[in-house]
Length: 201
Image (cartoon, rainbow, N blue to C red; front, side):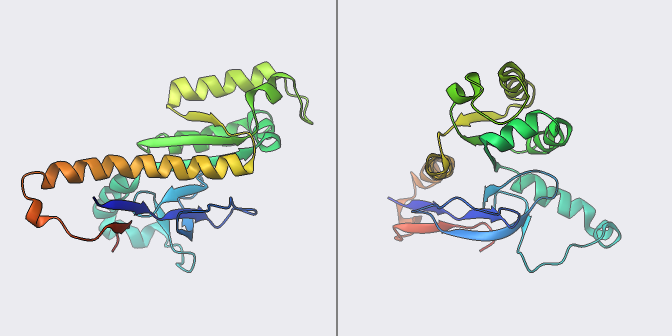
């Protein structure tokens, strides 16, 4: 059986990236102002770190093609926050974070992984004046209105494990579709047991 291995994209803005123990990773400039920290190559809008940003006037001649390409790539997006980052984003940085979540809502799957527990928020075990109810109600609002999956991971290690699990679950859906396509034509299936998932290849 073929196993699809996702290539995880890590945004260049990540100061202390998660340590992903089993999946290959690449640095990338993920979609601006989206707040996306982790994606999957070929399924997240991104550019290689050494690619210069193009101005809008250069994109206009191929705007239709580019918009179509971006729609197909907006499939998997994860943003990551520590407890302190979360409090800041739900407090003074709420408007900016809301704008980021709105961009993320264009992705088929979007999630927020939090390096803490809900219990820590409920006990207000953080250095911030924001009330726990404001944090939790705000997260509920993002989940209901924008379809953001809120995942409590406990710590950075838990967040890394969760990112890998989500990425693998995502590609299993692609793998399932593949098996459906080749079900009646087994001779057409490649013999490779492990394939790096990269739509650009």
